[in-house]
Structure formats: C-alpha cells, structure tokens
Amino acid sequence: MVAVELMKVEMRRNWIQLLITFLILSFFTPLNIWSQHVNYHSYEFVDFLYMEVTFIFIVLIIALALVQIGSERSNGILEFTCSLPYSRAQIYLTKCFLGLSVILIGWLLSFTLTGLILRLNEMQTTYFVEYYLDGLGAMLLFYAITISAGAFTGTAFAQGLVTISVSILPLLLVLLTIIQLDILFNLEIPLDDKLKNVYSISPVSYLSFDSARYSELYIPFLLACLFLIVGYFAFIKHPIERTGAFFTWKSMNRPVQIIVIFIGVIGFSAFGYLTDERMVGYLIGGGIGAFIGFIVSYYLIFKKKK
Image (cartoon, rainbow, N blue to C red; front, side, top):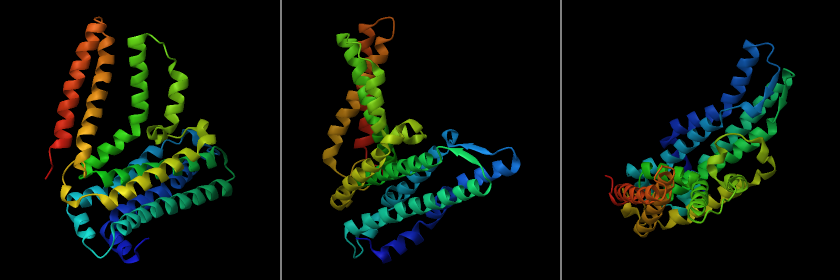
C-alpha cells in the first residue's frame, strides 16, 4: 500500500533527480525528431531502428533508483525513514510507485508528442510502436533490477555493481560454460543458437533497440515484475544495522564470493587456453583468475564502507 504523505516527502527529497529524469524521458525523443525536421526539410522519414537513445534513458533510470535507496542508505536517510510510522512494505512500495510513475508518465508523454509531430508533419516511420514498447520494457526492467539490488546491498556503489552484474550474468555464465565444455571435452557446441535464447533473457540485451525480438516483448515486463517482487521481500526483511556493508545479509557474503572466484577461474582459464601454451596456459589462467576473484571479492564484499 502506497503512503501518500511519505510520497510527498520522497518527492521533496529527490525532486531534482525526479524532474531531470521526467523531462529527459518526456522531451528528448520528440525534440530530437522535431529539430531534425526543422533543420533538414527533407527529413520526412524516421527509422526508429537507428534511434540510439535507449542507453541514455536506462542510465537515467538506474541513477534514479540509486538515489532512492543506495544514496539514502549511505547517508543514513533510509534508516531515518524506516524509523517513521510507516511499514517497510509501505516505504518500498512508495518508492517504487514514485519511480514507476515517472517512467510511465514520461514515456506516455514522449510517445504522444512524437506521434503528433510525425502525424502533423506527415512523416513516414518504421518501428515507431515497437521502439517505444521495447524502450518501456527496458526501462522498467533496469529500474526493477536496480531498486531490487538496493534492497540487498548496503551502499550505492554495491547497488550499482550488483545491477551491472545481474544484467550480464546469464549471458556471461552460459558463454563461459560452453567455452569450458569445448576446451575440456571438445564438444564443439554451436554458440549461435544457445546464446540467442540466453541473450533474450539477459537484461544487457535491452540496452539498445532490437526489432527482431518484438514477438518476445513480454519478457522484460515479466522479469521486471519478478525483480520487484524479490526486492519487496528483501526490503521488508533487510537488517538496518548492516548499513555500509556490501550486502545487508551477512549470509550472502560467502556464496557470492565463491561465485566471483568461480567466474574468475573459468574466465581467465579460457583466456589462458588461447595462448601458445594451451593446457599450461589454461591452468595458469585458472590460478590467476582464482587469485584475482578472491582479492576483488574480499575487498568489495567483506570490507565495510563508512
């Protein structure tokens, strides 16, 4: 349940980030098309396949979610908010409602204005609706990942790093696993078909518009709902006293460290195999990967930040 008074507090506290995000989401695309039309009168055809602005929008969305939880947790503001007469469920849902409202209203305004500009100037288009639906799914997905990551982490840096890691993890794990199977057992597994399916469910694939996945546009919306639900249950249970730690749950430290070391081993061993030494390089690379994975994970996860 959304708390109206708390939403007013959130809006006053983060009004700059909310306003900047809303304005850019709402007016960047229509103003860009309008300026192109004014400056180049022959600009009568718009192919949205080549509109390379989705990445900019996603960066804005991630930054907004970082401010809403990570920065507030680091500054002690979130701890103060949790001491107010609101449940943690209300706090989480209010933050999500505010962020999602900015995304949806900004997207709807941009879609409407762009459509009017195209229609009034009789400009022909391709992939107009597909581009906007794909962009909405991408923004909702990355907002859900980032806000959910904030429920698990104790700093803004950790929240951002987990967001990036989750975005590339499915693709990275499958790719490295296939390479390892090819090296160890000479299976020669074709990458194209395998990676295509994994790529479609990997958030990193939504950093840019791809018209080929129009029939699978439901995927980012489903994933966004999943991440929001996971974040909800994590937020209402997270321990406040772990503020400053990488993860709010201490029990997550060791399993995540093992995953980081594992990725380091299979990643660096694959690179080592590409050298002239082959299996010797494979073993040396695996050892280097294990060492780097241990050092990086130790200083990131186990060293509490003030």
